[in-house]
Length: 345
Image (cartoon, rainbow, N blue to C red; front, top):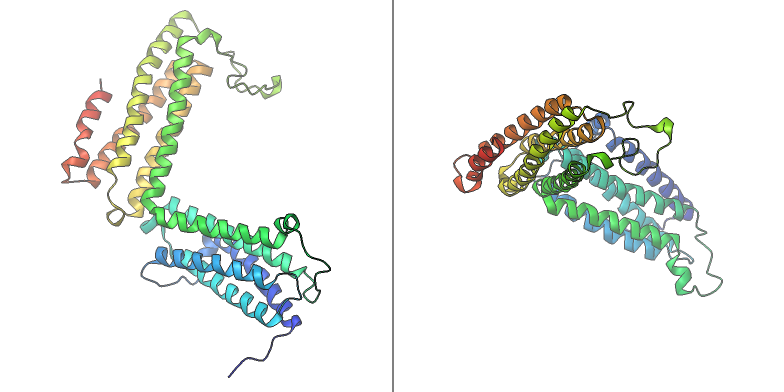
């Protein structure tokens, strides 16, 4: 039995309901407690389903943009298009609710939620624009290519495309791929830290205590209260310590690169494994930042030594954890003993 034709009033009611739903879902998936209350999908592979659904949402955005082309808009076709999009969005959210950190890792779930939220937000922007359209009006004149390029309807469709593509890209990268991206980011930060420390070692007297990073801070925005002055003997000890740690930081960069290559395949690594690796990497990176700042700004060798102990403990723990993940696979862990030997020199 065919459906009765839908009216403009019904279409506008559906747009309003859809918009309200998008607002609610965005709030819900941003709150861990709220997302836990969402009835999760129960599919064998939610990542594969997210990819499929993202591609469907991409196509639906295109169709919606076409059917709502200034008109008059075919109300019946528009209603069915919006209804289908609203149904798919609900599935989208339930798939995200199925992702658990123990399987996929905290960083993957957090990134997935962020990217899906962008899909919801861009759809909401499109719906807001559609609500403001005069659905019955015919265009008074032919629209130029320049005007069409500035059409909010088409711009928001483009935003949906980009958001859907970002979800697909994340899913295809996988939890291991995302961890590798994070490790590379930490390696890049480590390179900067080593460069800053090396430059300071070469010319510690040229270092600007008040504005070390060229931020042009006013007096009341001073980064440290102390004047950074130390005795010649203390400075000599600090420089010797810093020179040693420049080499150790280079070894930690090598460690990050080795960890990146030694992570087991996607199917053999759990979210908890990734959480542990990422915890060590972020703690090491944060403490390295603190070590460099303490050396360059505060010139406190005792504090530097305390921080270096934390870095050392975390680095060694990371090495041993990666070794345990690859138990029995000598090819993936043969670098461990060499690295430990070098780092302990």
